Image 1 (cartoon, rainbow, N blue to C red):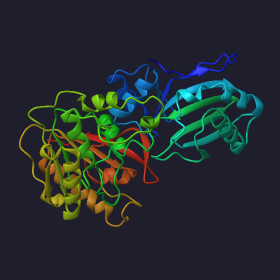
Image 2: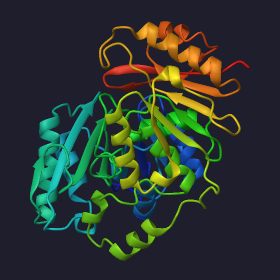
Image 3: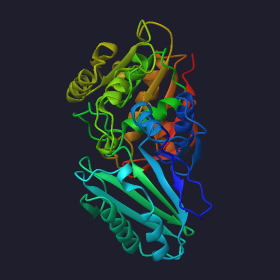
Length: 385
């Protein structure tokens, strides 16, 4: 049954059903992933992707999409030039359809270019509307794993009320407990692999693998595993939630596994990083699809088989200190040029000088994206030879 957003009576507005929050700069890659998984129209917008559907589609997006940071389901959309109109619109919503009296509710509000400018006052109207309909504890603040989150956004007097169906951010797959000094989030890593053009049948090598984020994402994709198969979601706290249907959905693979598995190889100079990557892969159930070895970048040797993709996120700038980075990138480029002719390279760095220091024919690809408070760029090329 569709539970798509409803406009308040007389508003003349129709809400976009689902907002897939994306890492900024990676919206086109998330849109492509959504279309591949059957979501439509998958229209990129700043900060996300809009798709059609109700609660069943939002649940599926949480389970299946690797690049989505969060899945917001629109419940209502209407115009409110003043607080009284806002409260009337919020009280028309059938809250008992969504909320349980035993589950806490957390609300957030934002206002931009609107006659309602006080976010605290807007949030208080939402709190009062929910309390009047459902005897659930309601408070203002960010949602947490034990609560249901509601987001009220007012832009140019247009109110959009959304339900956070995810809870915790979706990069928390539920497996990665051991992390390195500056890991990329899993959602970002998955979209970088997509931007780099990696396919699930081809080899992948990360010569500075850290705690194994790229390796585990690639191995799960090759195995046909859903990213949300083992983590909790906020939609499990909604009224009428069907636990049996979720269990069945978790058990379904996204695709048949690639057999024999492609080479997925991770190297790192630090034994602790290799131990962390191995532990994370074991928890994710893909340790048998990943090869790990402790090795300096200068000890890199060409693996057997066809060429594939080298993806590497070396230290840069403020990340893990900035000394000797040019030398490190020169050594990286030299090793790749010596051993991996014909392999594609996807290098992550905010610094064009470091990309050039590799000596490889790399070009920037796509807009920058954030990580660790820095705007990063993806540099792509092919190792000559």
